[in-house]
Length: 551
Image 1: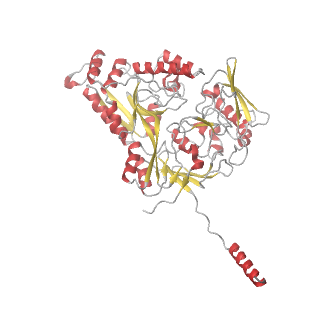
Image 2: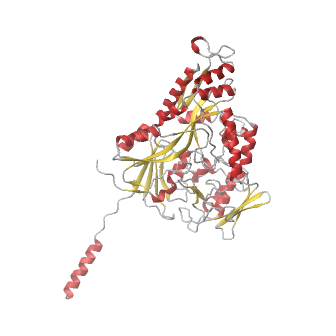
Image 3: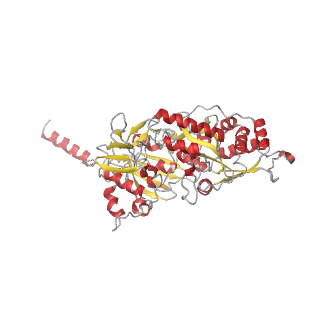
């Protein structure tokens, strides 16, 4: 080729280089939820629906994977007595943690021991509006390694759950330490700091926009490792399960979250109607659906009445009918795959035995078959729950029918979840029976549910989840001991005894463990619910999307 040929080739290369390439389309996933996070800081809430969003931009030292196995996340490895990273010094438990070398905040600052020290200081401060400070109050000190990339925690007593997610929190000390402390060294309220509205996290995405009541938008954090495949995740807030279904069908959403997504019946119905468009990902559930009984009520404080209610309700039939056969019948507050699950014999359906117990309890059948107490007052129970799920109302209607068969009148009292739970259950203002679900994970032993010092009241700021008001000294002592026992077999024995006592005394009637179902359109990959308290976004860096198929 002559000189002119080379010149022409050069011009062609220059021309191609000068021609702008079309921008690659944004890889975006749009998630739908019916519940907006009540806060953007994990330290300030126990809400499962909030943690679904938090996990996009906030990570912990460890996580529970879909098999419920404990895995390192920000930590280099999970400390244990076996690997030598945890040991006993007299009555104290000492644990050493090392952070991954690539653990960073979204602004590029490395995560260091001081981040955990600051969060611990906040948790231990009684003036802060943090939740779940029980573990923090059991910690005597946190000492950083010389290089700041690890730390040693000294517990005042053994804690068998020292390595669970959310035990050790972190806050970016390089941003917050100086401004959270006033001139006297006291902590200013974290909840009132601007950081609470625009947090800098350490996860695969970073929050870039929040329109309250509408959406939250996240962009990939280029500082995170491993790097997310998606460019963007948008979480849209919709008002109801019906609106969520409609948005999926209209192509406005790619998927639902786990907690705060579609209820089981709606999710399965959507996939049945359009199997070529939608996929349902399932995981065995850890949400314990049950009927809580207010044991301070004059009728329900009698254990014979509580047993009668349990015998009168055809639980297996109701669970099968309301879950299309997908839910597992519960006999305890632990799901079958929980390490402490005890194989109790099933609670039978025996309405004849229920009638005999009600007679023995001094509630004979009167005119029209309706039972009356010693004051001739008809026995009429209020069945309370959330108004937002169709299967909830169906469940309570079937319970109502069953109670009528043994002479107990009842009425349904359904309210929006915030009213039912926030003003009713949490403050123990439900009159008789509340139908709800608590999430049970591998670290749950029932401390909050059953200990008599965990009954919410105005005096303690409505802390604790013992909303039945159940009091049993043996159960309280056993649960306190389990919380200090490192030997897992001993813990199983202790919790087996707790489960048997609860079966005998029935402060709550177990109903079911519903599977966790996440619905997404065809073309979305990587979504894997765990069924436990681990949010759907535990593996958000692996999520990917392909364009929707033509309709």
